[in-house]
Length: 350
Ligand SMILES: [Zn+2]
Ligand SMILES: [Zn+2]
Image (tube, rainbow, N blue to C red):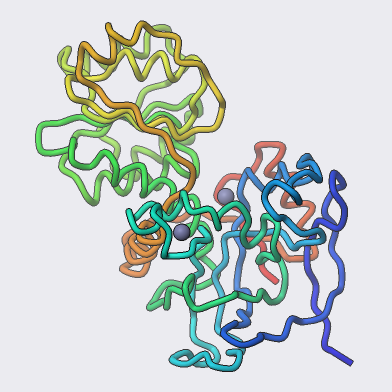
C-alpha cells in the first residue's frame, strides 16, 4: 500500500477546500518530490472556491488539486534522470510556471508565459500538503542560510513587488522620489527593495497606523495617512512641487489611481499592481502625455525576480513578517486572512 499524506485541496468546483488524505506522489522521469517546509498564503487562494468549472476548458485546470503556490522545502526524492540534487537540500520553488522557450519567456517576461495559466496551487497540485511534486528542475532555487519555512512569501509577494521595483528602478536615481501606496505584504517588500537598491527618497502612504510604523522601521523617509483629505497635495508639498518619479500602487482603487496620477513627475512611471480594479478616469493628454509619463501593469513576477528576491533573503537583508499555522489549521488560517486579521504573511507548516 502506498504511503499517504495530508493535503488541503479543492475537491469540487465552487466548494470550500478541505483537508484530505491522499497518496504521497511518486516522482516520474524528470520529476522531483519536495518535502514542504512551509507554504505562504496569498489573497488569491481565498478566491479558489469561487472559480467556475469552465477553467477546465479555458486554462486546463484539473480537479481535484491541492492549494498553495508559495513553497519552500527540501528535496525529498529525485525521479529517474534527475541529477545534481541531493535529498534534504533546502530549496524554494519559483511560483510562476513557464516554459523558458516561448517569445514571452525569451523576452524575460515568463510571468506572461502561456504555461502560467495553470500551476502549483491553481489547477495543479500545490504546497499546502506534506509533499509536492514538481515536473522539472526549472523552478528550483537552492537556499543558503534562508530557512525554507520562510522562503514561500518571497516566491510570490516578494517576487511581484520585486518585479514592480525593477520596472521603475531606472527612474530612481539620487535626488528622485518614489511613492509606495499600500504598505501591506507586497508593499512592505517594495519599501525594502527601494531602500536597498536605489538612492531615491521614499514616501509611503497607507490607512493603517501600524503599517505606517512598520514602513518607517523598514526605512521609509516619509509616511502619510492615505485617509487624509488631500494626499496628492501633501505628496506634492513633500517633493517641492516636482512629484514622484515612480509610484507603486499596491491598492489600485479609484482613489489611489487618482492620487497616483496626480503626483507623477515628468517622465515618471506609475505601476498599478493592486487588484482593486479601479478606473483610470483622467484626460490622458493632460496628466499622462503632458508629463511624458508611463503607466505599467502586470500579474506576478518572473523567474529572475524570484531568484533576486530569494538572494536578498538569503543574505539576511529582508524583513519577512510571518504567522505560522499547522496544516491541520489551514482553514483557520484562510478565515483569518479573509477577515483581514493576518498581521504578517500566513505560512502553513505541515
Ligand atoms: Zn499569490
Ligand atoms: Zn514560455
